[in-house]
Amino acid sequence: MASPSVVGVPELGVPFVELVGWAPFDPLELHAAPSTVRTANAIASRTFMRTPVSRPTVWHRSRGAFGTGTLVKARSSSGENAAVSTDEIASWLRAARHVVVLTGAGISTESGIPDFRGPNGVWTKNPAAEKAAHIDHYVGDPEVRERAWQNRVHSEVWSAEPNAGHRALAELERKVALDALLTQNIDGLHHAAGSSPDLIVELHGNVREAKCLRCGWRGPMNETLDRVRAGETDPRCTECGGILKSATVSFGENLVVADLERAQAAAERCDLFLAIGTSLGVYPAAALPEIALHHGARLVVMNAEPTPFDPVAAAIVRTPLGEALPALVDRI
Ligand SMILES: [Zn+2]
Image 1 (cartoon, rainbow, N blue to C red):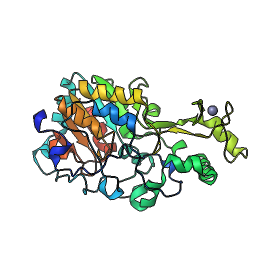
Image 2: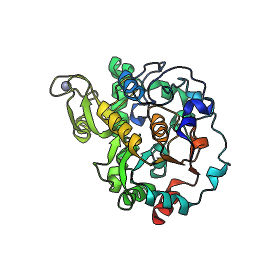
Image 3: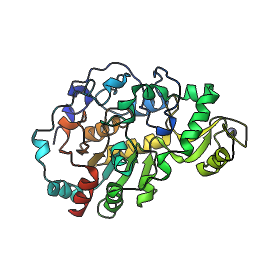
């Protein structure tokens, strides 16, 4: 295992360019007019910058920098960490006293929900869509909101089913000391697969609720979608008349501090950190394995594409998650 003193994104040769905050992730919000994404999430930044990582993690804002290697300069996985067997990873999981799992869009692609930065990702195919997902456009343009509500009504999220990877992670908590299941996904498929709700931290919110941007009201998304189906093109908060949107976190919105702090605490405490289906190239997800490594945890990366953390991972798994996760959990 690498010494914490040599672990951390700065040691990976990352050219630090500009603090951006977190990445957008919300497939329901890919409608807005183009904009330049430049707003850092001050609350999230403060939360993570308190951590004793070697230096604050800073990310380039242009989309090409994320996940393609421009920023991350991930090395090939052909080193010794690629040769670790599934049995050995299973033995690490058995022995670990505090396991933390982080999942990203890669675990849900096999459920028919497109990811963002993979070969067929939403933003790989349509780079303008990434810049488009900013809350300012949602708030400022009624047409943007009307399109967003239509997208929500017709989203693939509502019909998606958990796949073998989600189910394997639900099984995992019955076999190992799982402290937290952190996810960047908003699709609710970990809940649907049977993972314990009290272990799940949805860093980017969820689509099961609608929220008011003015008064903070929250309610079941279905009820608001019923209003759209009944003819309201831009439904407003029944409490205060404010603008409604899904309870996800778009560009320009604050992440939920309590969720970030819980994720950070779990990363600090764990001795085994599993990063699954995430490119680990964007904030805040990328800060979490960095925190875990800094506190001496072993990192296992399971992702189809290289990540910036591959050089410091104890093991890298490239096999499709729907195969790799059940195989791994079976061996524990
Ligand atoms: Zn309201």
